[in-house]
Image (cartoon, rainbow, N blue to C red; front, side, top):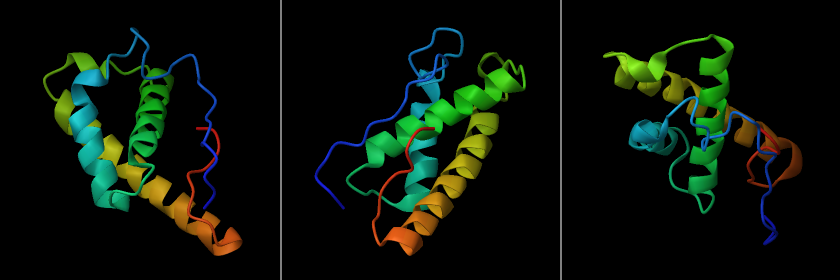
Length: 106
């Protein structure tokens, strides 16, 4: 692993977007990422990446996930699935390069 910063492209549906307010659910996403990959040095970046992916999926499916009563459960399930996907991507990258890093981009 290098000491160089990990840079990600910021999509227009990033976690700062007012269109999809996922910030109230960051704790759920953190728990899902922690369950999936533990707490590596890049944990916060991994959570940000999963939040970006969730925002994109919600926008793609045109869901009102953050405005309904079942939002916490839906966000938790989606975050767990994305965290598992991220873990598998990190493992594949490690197997091919010998480096433990986040995938570039989202």
